[in-house]
Image 1 (cartoon, rainbow, N blue to C red):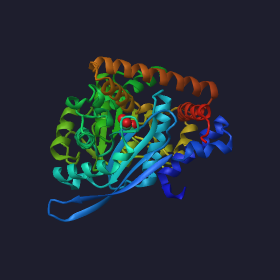
Image 2 (image 1 turned 45 degrees about the vertical axis):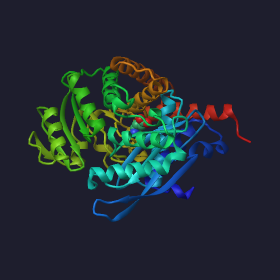
Image 3 (image 1 turned 90 degrees about the vertical axis):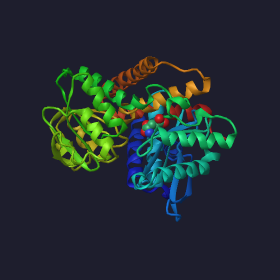
Image 4 (image 1 turned 30 degrees about the vertical axis):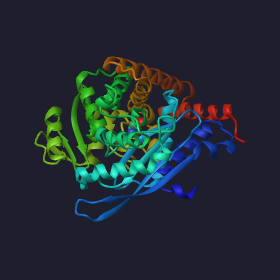
Length: 418
Ligand code: GLU
């Protein structure tokens, strides 16, 4: 399947192959689990504000259809490629299965820098992309959500475009919507809160006192900022944070509200006065109790993994640690890894709750959402830790093997058609 050739897809395949080996999945059954079931590539023409037309490539990949509809975010970023989207869809499959959600994994994206478009252009691009996806998505087919470069407004436009086409309101077609359109209380904060909850559990496991612990956050978007708030609420000091423009370091702890206002006003962390500038590479190597990579994939590699000085590595992003880095970290038991498919699962779990509420037209309170979220995360954390200890494998291998095994069992139980 050369069509998916991409370093991030290679990485997802390498991880899968290690898990398949560990689970002793017969070689003949591996390709069926590995390759995306189907994918769609579309050309999205956009009428620019200046009257010209630009065509952007768009994608949607559905990794497997064995457990229910597919689920996963939509990414707007200049580096989006089919192979990257396919890798992200594959990780969504293992994540949903680990969390026990009735979904296969999916992901979508448009190769575009959303910051370079006006609000009107973004709306037209989103509506046209959604229109191209109409035969491919739906509450019982595939349910998009926000990811890098997209947000609640994007989901509102997608929901409106789909509903207008159907002739009635279909809130269950996307999650991560504004509350007024059938979004769920607690969804926006869920990924970061989940990261905070799991870091707290890792600290308990390791006997680290949460109050006064130090945290470093790479990426200050929806995941990174809410993870920072959640950690700070439990007494941690966030000593550094960054975005694409670079980062800020302050040993006394960053003023998170001031940082958030600065980012809201300037759309970047550059020139934030509340600390000293630090670049992204140096930030990852700061001594701290918890490091949260919450930006892009492949940030911690064979090159820098040996130099990490955190006690807990909490993967807020998808795929931030490469297999080469994993091999190094396996020999560094002093670094406790909370793997991405567990660590950032709060987002898709709250999305599942949103979808259930939309299908039932019966809505929950924020504490109902958050209590149920923590309960699911707790179960997955305990199962992963137990598996890692019992089988003497890394936390990533434990989490992934739980996810892959569930999909494998579902495929076996359903059999091969025809
Ligand atoms: N984009 C998020 C993720 O990577 C959320 C997906 C969803 O809520 O469907 O997990």
